[in-house]
Length: 269
Image (tube, rainbow, N blue to C red):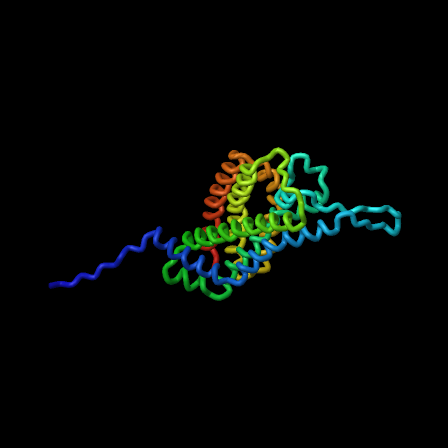
């Protein structure tokens, strides 16, 4: 009786799932990932507590004699955005820029170092030579970066709540409700896909040159950074969530194809 050897077909779905398992396992074992999460959590706690302690502090300009009184935060939600009538609150000049939206820039560091390590160690070259396709690699890296960015946003949110509670700040929503806060966070999480797609494209182009990918990613991300607060305000509605979701998917697809083209047309070194 003739023995027949059959090989199981390794389709696109299995390739992507396999690649995702490897990358998520690497992310969970990466010290960088936990450092970024810790920074995301403790940053709003320390910033809120320190700003609250400096509330009322006076500083005198030695040249003009003008006295400046430091105003600390009055509301815990200032770490996330501007509340209705928030222009009159203290500390808004600082929190208007140094808030949860910084995580869109922080995730650039994680994505760039995570991808550059593949090219620096030779892992990517071996991976493509053995079995993986460029499309699988880009999809996996984009989803892993998106997951890391979403967790960083959640960590910052939790840190903001704790910092506000420790500093005895108000949690008054000024006419908003919990649903607005939830949709604000969802909109930011979906918008993270736009930034991660940009950082992934830059990283696969820079390859092992992590310094170049980080500098270029921060520069490219800053072009969209000022729009984040307008697209994902504290008073977000389902429209904001849908727009961010659709925009994230479109960017992920478009820049994903661009990333694949870069990998196919350039040397993997």
